[in-house]
Image (cartoon, rainbow, N blue to C red; front, top):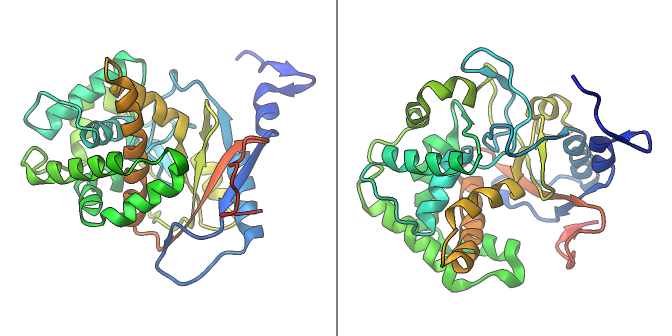
Length: 314
């Protein structure tokens, strides 16, 4: 193995991690408990997450889901490692976003549509991935229904994330697309096993297994805003201050997936629409997972924190 590149005695990874900071919202994005977590504990958990980030090439490693639970091995029995994360993994997330922006997928079943999206991502060198017992995958129609049935709530979440870039008309389009998906029969019989069927022989190295007996207990979701950083989910799980574990969302990785879906003459509009779809979908996923309390933190480069931090803990 080659030695990592060093700058002034520090590896590139160490240098990058030392220039990260967390921005944490002062209100949970989900609260079914009426409880709160002290700011010092939230920032201590952010420190654990930052320490658990690893420098990777998003085009060289496979993706996974944002799930906070301890990982076991891959389906083929080999060890897994840090992977960039989006809900359900890149294939499922790409499929969901494609549907939410109204991308025409010329197929009559969910499995065929997933195959189209997976092929498009693979052509752009975005490698397939996911894990077993995935609520975001198996529950795809559940959180699509949440979008349809709770438009004000998911749009409010998108507005809080997008700020001045939020557009009510685009948000309404995303909600309408979720309703259209559910009104049809394309996804009748959907289950998480379809991802493995689409990936076929590739599934062994693409799909992770969870450790035995782990449950959803995280109380935080951290959105990594810096490219080419992926979480060692198991390390974070084992060292958590609160949780255990944290959901991890890699926004730059989501952008790569969205870029594949939004190319063409209508790219500008579709790109903006996909950003709304990202936030609305993430807001819905957060609400349907069984965790009862979730705070959100953003991991950013120092000096690149939100301009308006009135809604953050400092």
